Structure formats: structure tokens, C-alpha cells
Image: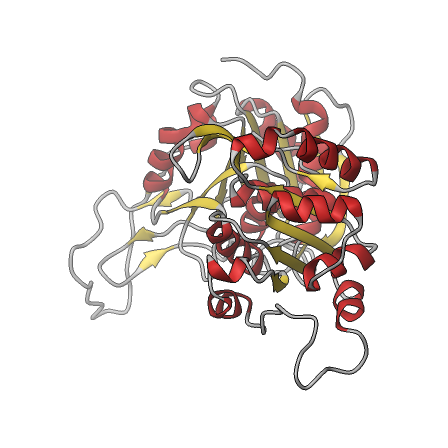
Length: 405
């Protein structure tokens, strides 16, 4: 579950060619579980029609102070009191000036004036307008009053000129929304690889060897890293989960498939979290047709699959986190695995305890970190909460020099 789930966000759209970027902001927020209400100025509707924003939000787009028939109460108060944050993207020089000077002459500017929730502006305009002294004075006033502004990008503008004034990209705006709503962005700019789910090793064309992993822990870790600003790649075996938004997803089948996928990008990562339940054994030569069983017995000769974790340290300087799913002697086995495979951290949990391990929505375990004498208990809670706890603890020690090959 994304940290933005059920958050109520009001998106103000003003008259700029960058209004099309607001569509992508809505899509990313909705995919993360947020509820979005769009308020458009009259000039904004000249760039992108209200029908588009209505389709994307699933709500009627608000454009006018005076609706026929009028709703009960005062519409601007009702809107302002029922959201967690207001985002204006794109924000023109006009709306920045009106907000800074306390002018309320349409629905959006009135809502901004009456609101006491966090206000975030993503400016978009020609570079001359952006650099104008009046605009900069208004920006200073807004900052002084606690308003939050995302610096526009330098680049190509609508008239093909080049300068500072391009609206920040939608993913940057969404990341800032997360930060304002209390979700730390301590992984911003970091590349994180997460593996999840089971692997399948074919016996014949219809049968395979696998395990009960649902992929929920790995998917939670991927979503938590996304929520905290990371650039995430998720490599997953066969699962029935919806993939997180704003990350690259690579689907694999066998342990060898996962090994190749991990090795291909592991040298480019800052963190590698190996949460997948990779199968330990496979058939050397699976049958290419369905095996008939006239005697109701079948003997399989199996061989070991690649040890993905063991080979990672020799090719990557990333901070590597492994998982150890045990049924007995957990701490002893986890620490042994951590040492032999030269990991920076390992998460121990048990397959034979209620509410933990495979197929559950909750988990409990112990996190062992490089250089720490004692493990950190991870209490029984949702896998998403555990994922954030793991990332928090990992980040504390990640600044230390990583293990080298």
C-alpha cells in the first residue's frame, strides 16, 4: 500500500502550456491511492479541457465560484477544509502574485486564501517572467508565509527559447507532495534494486517446482523505496500482485532468469534488497512434453540453482540486504549467511510463526546490520510498515564505507 493511499489532494491548474503535465501528476497520485480534486482557472480550460481532468480524477472539475444550482454552504470553504494538501501545478506568475498579495477573484485564488493546509506551487512561465523582479518579490513573500515552491527547471520553453521557467517534472512534484505529507525522502537520488516473489523451475511443459512466496514483502519494500524518493527496479518472479507505479519492473520465471536480471543491473545500484524466495533446486533438463505417470510415481534428479546472493559482492559495491527465512536456529543461520555471502544486512524471519513468512500481510523478524553487535527486533506489523522500518535502519548505516570485493 502506497503511503499516499486515501490522502486527499486538491490540484489547482492555471493557464499555462504546462497544464498537460498536471494530467500526469493526477495519474501518478491516483495510482498511489490518493484522492484528487481538480480546480481550474478559466484560462487553464483554454489549454486542457475540464473533461480530461474529470476523467482522470473521477470527479467533477470545479471552475466557478457560483454554480447553478448553488451547493449548500460556501464552496471555497468546503473545498479548503476537506483536503490534506493543495498543489498548484502549473502555477503561473498571475496566481503567484494573487496569492502573495491576498487577491481572491476566482475560485482557486479564494481557496488558496482561505486554506490552512500546506500549499505547494510548481511555477511554469517564460524565463523573463520568472526572472522579473515583481515575480521574485512575490516568491519571497510566499516563502516568508510558509508556502512551498518547487524551483522551475532550466530548459526549452514553449516558444523554443531556452531558460529557467519549465515546470518541474510530475514525478518531482509527487515526490515533494510525499515529503510535505511526512514521508521522508531520504532515498532521493538513490538507485534501489529489489527482488521479490518465488521462482519456478519447470519439470515438464505443465508442471514446475516452486514455493509459497507471494511477493508481498518484496513489493512492500519496492513501494516504500519509491515513496521515499528512490529510483527503483523491481525484479519479480510469478506473483498475483499489482506492480508499484513509478518503478521499472522486470518479470522472471526461473532462478537462472533472476540471476541474469540481477547481475545485468547490480553494478548500477546503490542498494540491493534480495527479498525473493529463489528456488534452491532445478531439473538439469526439463521434459519438453507432459510427463505421463502410468505407475503414479516419479523420481526427479535435481541440481542446485545459482547462488545469486553469494556472487553479488564480487561485482557490486551496493549496500546489499539479504533475507533468511528459517524454521529453527534462526539467528545462527542468518548470521552465518550474512558472513559467508558478505552482506551488509540481513532480515531474519520464521516460516513457522503465526502471521509471518509466506502469503501473509504481516511479518515479524530481526534485522542484523554490519558493524552492529545486536539485531534489531522488527515487531509483528504490516509488511509495508516493516519495509519502512528496514529502510530507516539501513539508511542509518549506509553512509559508512560499503564492503568491497
